[in-house]
Length: 122
Image (cartoon, rainbow, N blue to C red; front, side, top):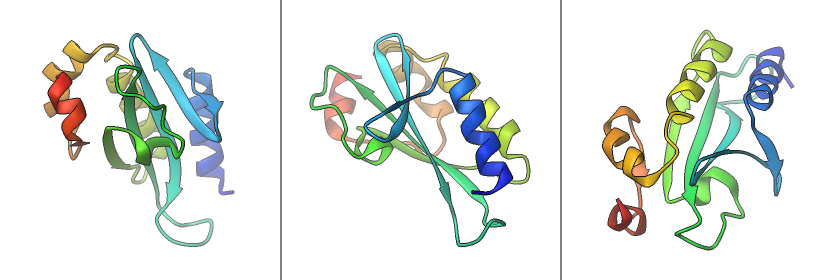
């Protein structure tokens, strides 16, 4: 595990992410944000990205596969400052704790893919 990856995971945990079914999950109000740290390549110098998903109990079942199974999914490249980018992302998503806010701020989540079931709720 690279030092950047370790720092990103440590930051996620310090900001409230807890392991659930092998994935990091952050509860915020009525929503749950799943965050998986992934490498885009092999080796310790591979660039990192976050796979981020949002789930609500209004859309059962709970995702087993982490972010990729969530009704909202986005990939966030972490670039040259992985902890800074992670912190900025966490500031953005932890301000969204209900469906109404998610619907209003969806455009602030670039590249977010939203499935039809979630769109119907929004």
